[in-house]
Length: 102
View 1 (spheres, rainbow, N blue to C red):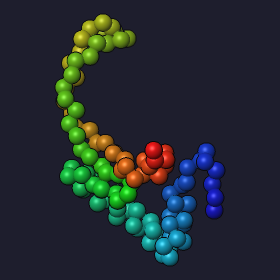
View 2 (cartoon, rainbow, N blue to C red):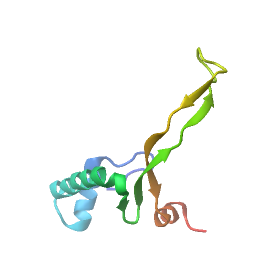
View 3 (cartoon, one colour):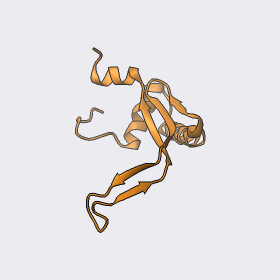
């Protein structure tokens, strides 16, 4: 089932495509997606790798100061505290496959 580049695949389309390719049922493919996401949520603090695609990484954004551009505090300097953020780093192999290698 070929889709146009403008619309991304839905979860059920993705499950159907992978189930057909691997030779399992759509229900088994959906169970795999669910188990993988649960594992990613638990392991994200330590980094979670999706082989060939990338990895989830928990990083700490440092405290910073920012000048307000609009609103009632226009022109004032505001301190933003440090916080933890979740980032996804795309693997080099995925970048090369999608964007084309040099």
